[in-house]
Structures are given as C-alpha cells and as structure tokens.
Image (tube, rainbow, N blue to C red; front, top):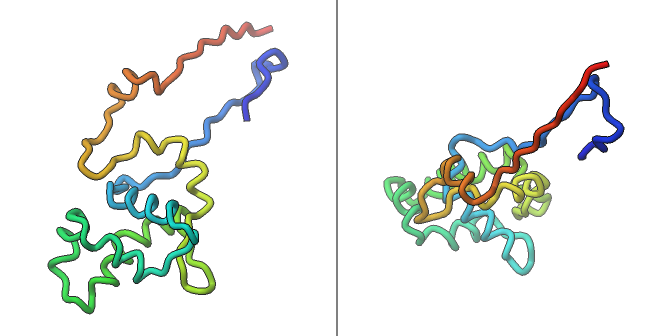
Length: 142
C-alpha cells in the first residue's frame, strides 16, 4: 500500500513489504519454482519433480553421495522443505506440490535471485540496473 503523501502527517508510519528469503536460497530452489510454475497441470508429485531435476548437475552434486533409497528424502529435506517454510510451495491433499502464496511477494524480487550458472547479483549491480529508486521527502513539523 502506498500512502497518499498529500494527506500524511509527521505521525504517519511507512513500511516496505519484503519477502522472507532464506540465506540459503539457492539456484536449485529457483529451478524447482520455475519447474512448478511452468507445469501445464499446475501440480506435480514429489517423485515426479525429483525425476525431472535429478539429472541437472547442481542436483547431482548434492544427491549423488546418498544411497538410492535416501535420495528422495534428501531432496525433500534440502530443497522442498525450505520452500514450504517460505510458503513458496504447498503440498496439496492429493500429495502433489503447487506454487504457494509466498510466490506473489517473492516474484517482485525474483530477478535478483540466483540462477543456475549465474553469479549472485550484488547490491551495486542492482543499483546499476536501476533496481532501486530514491525518493526524498521534506517533512516540516508543526
């Protein structure tokens, strides 16, 4: 919500809605969200999602050291549970996964998130892309 600045007073408060993003938000998390978002049915089972991404090099590096029986559990613990905690994915009653309500807030910041094969964007890099806007307000107290 953006307040009408012509009707504000010194006592008004302002806020910015920012998504809660784990410090460990990885390129793999982004890949999973994109896989879910582009699925024609909009819902995918855990094992189907795992089978789609397990061949990607970034997932192979993490899951390869595990026994075949444990790989789905490790995939769930390392990749799906953090996304669920952020409400970015939701387990449906039929056992499928869908994109969650937290994605609406995160989508505004999605371009700054890491992608597979891309280095992390720094604040300086975002500034150069006009990602920030600067506004100055002169508030005169009565």
